[in-house]
Amino acid sequence: MDLIRQRLQAVLAWERAAPVAEREDPFALVVERLREEAADAPSFATAREARTFREEMERRFDGGTLARLGQGHEATLLQVAEDRLDALCLARAWLDSGGEPARSEVRMSLVYAITGAQIDRKRERLGHEEEGHSWGL
Image 1: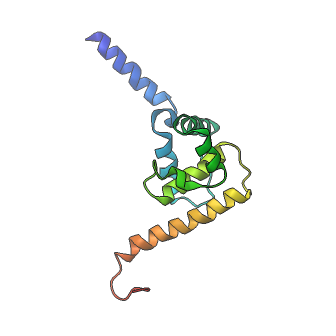
Image 2: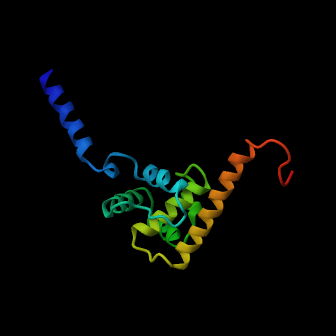
Image 3: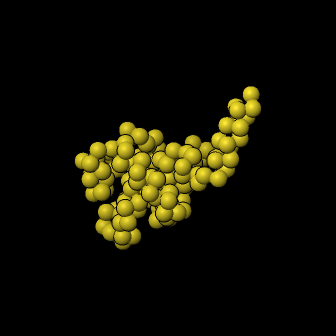
């Protein structure tokens, strides 16, 4: 019983000391952070988070998929993302994790698409709460 208690305490101590990026799914962390943030907000709080995310992407996807992501094809992520906004956020995070320049054409097109997807999501959410006449109906 003491051995179990010691191991449990060791695991709990590690969880308190380990960075969040090592304890949780890197995809979920990035999507959760970027879903409601400004489209050009930083993808990662630390270089370690960026490295952890990049390693997870390289583990899950082959070189061809990652090359398409580098060109801005977020559709390759729809298999792991809940919706298009999440896929866009993951694609932008992939570019950010590799040191892509902030003003690159691919990154800027993703930022523009994220902004549009965020607006669409808010319209859908608010459209169901409004009473009375709605545009487009």
